[in-house]
Image (cartoon, rainbow, N blue to C red):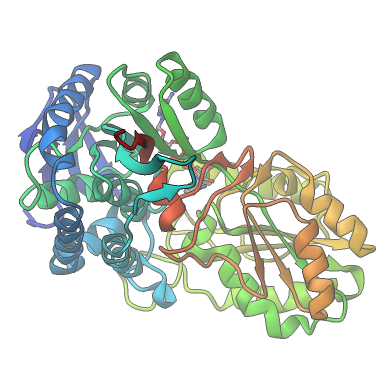
Length: 478
Ligand code: NAD
C-alpha cells in the first residue's frame, strides 16, 4: 500500500484520531483510482469537536498576540515540510495538475504557505477613540470563540487555510468540515498541524450537507465561515440565524470580462484564457462569460480556440498536463449540458467540449456567437466551457455584465484608461480587474456583492471579521 495515497484518514477531534462505522472512498476524478478512505462524520462528531474547541479556547485566546503569530509561521513551515505529499493528495482527489503552468496543486500548497506567513504578519491593534473631557475610550478586537468552517471541493486546502489561519491568528478555535468530495487533503493537513497546535484548537469533522447543517446550526458556534454555492449559502445563513451566529459567506460567481472596442484581441487572449480556465474553470472568481465588440468577435474566438487546442488535458500526475478533469460527475454533467444547450440554441463550437479519458475530463470549450439569454451565460457553469457574447455597444455590454444574481469579480480589457475606469466603475462586483483576472493577495480584501456573498476575507478587514468589537470607557477618578 502506498503510504502517501492509499491510506485511511481519520477525523481529528481534540488532537486525537476519531473514526465512525461509515467509510467513504475518495477516488480520482480522472480515472476513478482509489486515493484514500475517510470516515463519514455525524452530528455527534460535530458536538464533540465543538466541545473540544470550546475547551481549548481559554488557553488559546489567552496567548500573547506574538505567540499566535509564531504559531501561524509554524503552520506555514508544516505546509512547507509536507508540500510534496499535500500537493500530490490534492491532485489525486481534486484533479488539478501538479504544475499547470504554475497554477496547479503545487501552487495551491504554495498559497497555503504564503497565506500562513502573511497572516502571521497581520495584527489588530487597539484604537483610542475621541471622547469627552475626563473620559477615555478604547476599542479592542476580541476573538469570537469557536469558528465553524465549511469548505468546497475546488481549492480544498487553500480555502481551508483562508478560513483557519485568520481564525486562529485572532484567538479563535476551529472546527472545519471539508467537502465530502475532497476531504483528504484537509484531513491530512489538520492531522499534521495537530502535531504543532495544542489539542482542540483545530478540529476536523467529515461528512455531507447534513453534517454541514449540524455545524452551521450548532448553538455553541460563534461564527460560521462558509465557501460554496449560493444555494447552500442561503441554508447556512438560515441555520446561523437560529442562534444569531455571525456568518461570512463566500459564494458563487458569474464573472464577466468586457473587451473594450479597439483592443488588439490576440494580445489579450492568453490573459483571458488563463482567467477563464484556471483550475479547469472551477474557480469562483474565474471569467465565466466574455463580452466582445461584434467587430472583434471572430478574431477573439479564433485566438482563444488556438489556445484551447494547444492545452494538454489529462491526468494531473502526468508531466506536461496543463488541465485536469472536472472534479465530480454532477459538475461534469452540468458543464456538458450547458454546452450542448448553447450549441442547440445557436452558439458555435470553436474548440473543445469533448471528453478525455473515461473520467470527468473535458477539453476546454470555446463557444462563439453566444447570446445573453443562454443558460451558459446566465448561470455559473463552473467548468471548462467559455461563452463569448458579441455586443453592439458598450452600454449594452455593461447592462449585460450587471445582470443576474452574482457580483463576485469582473474584468475590463484594453481601450483607453478613462474609458476603462468608467466601465470598471459601472460594474457591480466586489473586485474589478483591469487587463487581468483571478489575482489574489493575502493582504487585499476579497469578497462578493449581491448573491456572491457577505463580508470579505484577507487583509486586516478579513481578520477583523473573526473578532468582536469590545469598547472600554474609563472616566478619570475625581
Ligand atoms: P456546495 O455549496 O455544494 O458545498 C460546499 C460545502 O457545503 C460542502 O462542504 C458541503 O458538504 C456543504 N454543505 C452542503 N449542504 C449544506 C448545508 N445544508 N449546510 C451546511 N453545509 C452544507 O459548493 P461546492 O459545489 O462544493 O463548491 C462550488 C461552489 O462554491 C461554486 O458555486 C463556487 O462559485 C463557490 N465558491 C466560492 C468561492 C468564493 O470565494 N466566493 C470560492 C470557491 C468556491
